[in-house]
Length: 151
Image 1 (spheres, rainbow, N blue to C red):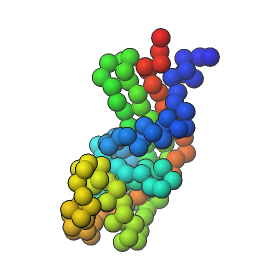
Image 2 (image 1 turned 120 degrees about the horizontal axis):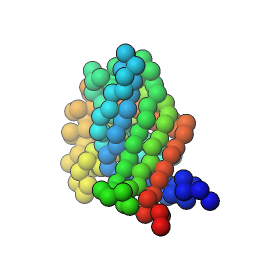
Image 3 (image 1 turned 180 degrees about the vertical axis):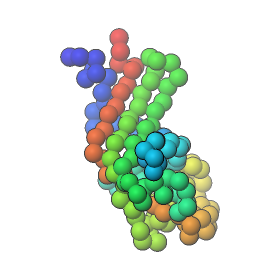
Image 4 (image 1 turned 60 degrees about the vertical axis):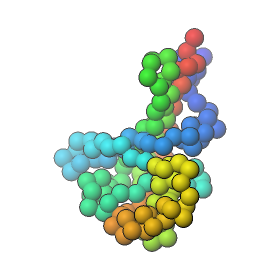
């Protein structure tokens, strides 16, 4: 077995890793073709897909309206032997309904503020949600690694 295969995570391990994470690096494509890379809190929908929201006037929203392709990186570890990560390549689908935006906002807010009750989060999410767009990432390819498996 080659090293790449040895360090790859199983589907279940990828799902658990994404469930445990809080932030990701989101790459969209600027009009001139350069990458636009930002750190985002994210949520997961009922199918385990990455969801996020952003202000409608943000650069990433403008980029996604033009080109829905994204890369999403969630990673952990400081030393090489500790590095773990999941890289999801895909396309976003906008979540247009106010209910979907609110649901996405709540999923994200829960990760931003672990342990805070939904009743406390909802006013913030409802207020900021009026100016936000929500998305779900439809994965096309998932790459993973867990360097703790290197012996």
